[in-house]
Length: 373
Image (cartoon, rainbow, N blue to C red):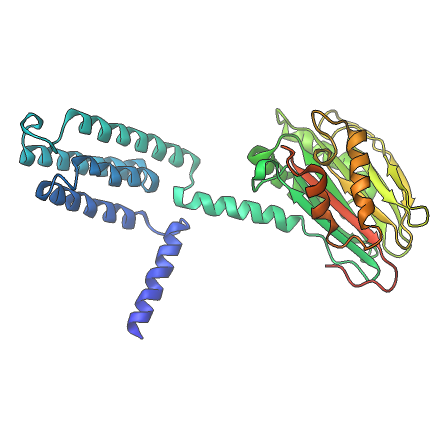
């Protein structure tokens, strides 16, 4: 039992350390012990343990230690290199000695490690914490993109596909049930750029937009979002956005757009797709912008699709052609229902596009539908 507790304690300490919560002296002490061990092994058997092996604790120190501690480690490593040189003899007398090339390699690794440690010190994030922070960033973006459950008779689903297979996307969605739960408000936004840069700005904007959503009347949301984006004063600071306000009792809705591709509504009666294009400029371009809405209504069997331009527009395909292709693929799901269709539509229409892609589907299934989560 005691041995089990020791193992559990060591495992927890290791996890805490590599998450960035452990003290630095653990790594410093461990690396200090490896230097004399490497030195002894090198002197005892220089054929199997080369003098250049001292770069191992030096590189590890550059990843784990602060610059002040790293300089202390370098001093011990330099002393060890001198001891090896003395004990092994001049490099001209045989192989496996401390040669000028070994000294240059160790010194170059030391300079690289010091630069890396200074960069981490300037940023204020330990190397072992960086991966955890990126993971938390990705999960926060995904959590903020979670859609609220809808009442019986409604179904919705959201699919996000970042550019280049990355984990971060400049496309995001924020949603909330307002007006006592009778209204669904959804905002789909496409931040300029892609990848990590767009993902970090998307995280900031999604938090701000999530705070604004439901706190303002629907017609005031995009003007407030535009003002917030202008205050950031980013060099590449514009974004497109589409804001849906849906009455879950009647099915009536309003769409507000800020330079975003139009929404698409499938009418169950006619089987045709209709574009729902609202007027409004890009977010973050100029102050005092006006955003006019377009109205519509979802009846039983109707479907509303909202998407970003990465899904329908590429360098060799204009948006009209892309929308035609999207609606053509979506027609295949009319008979069997659109459950699980969002991800498959992205795969079918824009699988290998080097841009962020997002697709939101909202279906009115009628009073016999199941609650959507």
